[in-house]
Image: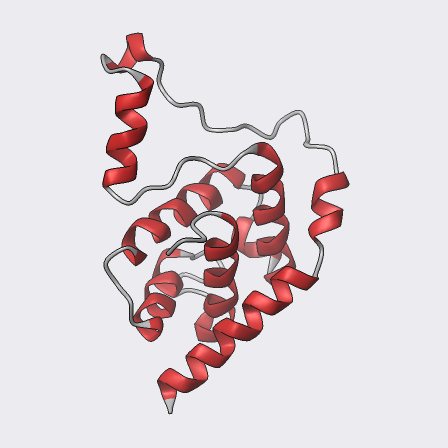
Amino acid sequence: MRTHRTITLLAAAAGLLALTGCSEALTSEPKPDDKVAASPSASQSGTAPEASSSAAAAAGIPPSPAPEQRAIYLAALNKIDPEIVNGKDDEAVSRGLSQCQSMMGEKDPTKRVESTNRRFISPNHPDGFGPTKAAFILAAVQTNLCPTY
């Protein structure tokens, strides 16, 4: 029963994210203080960018999202609860990419929601946002950062 409920929540979350707010995120201008995490250059890391990205892909870490996709992802999280991002865009993206990596080996939807709830925390939610919001967060991660997982 619990797994069925989690799967239903995930399906509803995916549908909600697909239907809401994407156009708003695409039309809003990024703020000057929004920073995109820069990857180290080949000279800094000692490896070619292609080797770094293929190593990350092999480890299950998807590439950083393009600016438009990043904006959509952050807007989706903010619609679920503004405290998820809490003004820390880079941290929210990093947590999402880490969630993608952990989902690579985990197929159980209940465990995916539980790990999302542990990973996405805030000062007012040190134990996560609960299973319902975690299911919505997971749907946002899967839809925008790692759709093939």
